[in-house]
Length: 189
Image 1 (cartoon, rainbow, N blue to C red):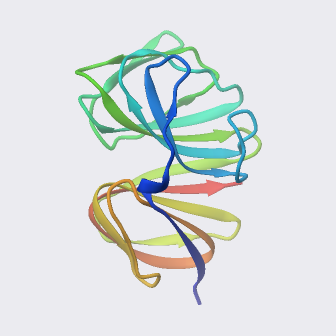
Image 2: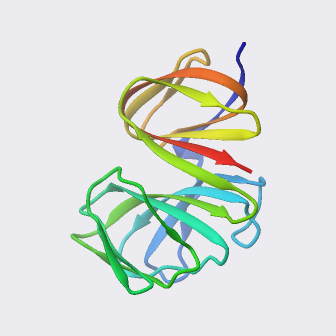
Image 3: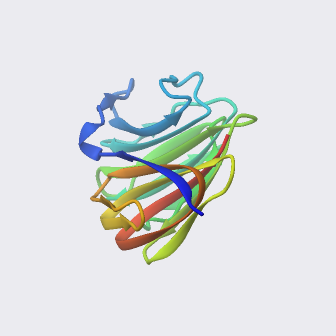
């Protein structure tokens, strides 16, 4: 029996927050606990428009996963080691504690960010470009974010367009139909 609750999070209802360094803007998709700020979130998922390279903000005790969604990509230097993130939809995990600098490889990018505070939450980020089952295990939340094209969630009769999201809680399984690319983020808090 499925007891999954679905909360749709439309892209058009997200406020844009400018970065302190002026290098871009961020739109929060979802976070926990609700209303938490950058200093006290357990997990936070966002999309960012990166207009220029520069240093990343440090987030102590935070693990990060970043995925390029649009643009030519970026080179991230994390604690002195360069990582080229040029292929879209390939999650890259790194520590928010690390000294991180970004160089854009060919102009502005849009990236998808998942941040979890160690000891409070963890996340697994998968990219789906096909039909699949989505399981919500007990004690987790699953966030679906449509990064390209469209997606539908079967029993909930939910349709997602580009950058729309659906937060699944409770316990059970549903069928995800994808005509594009969807980030499937399993969050344990």
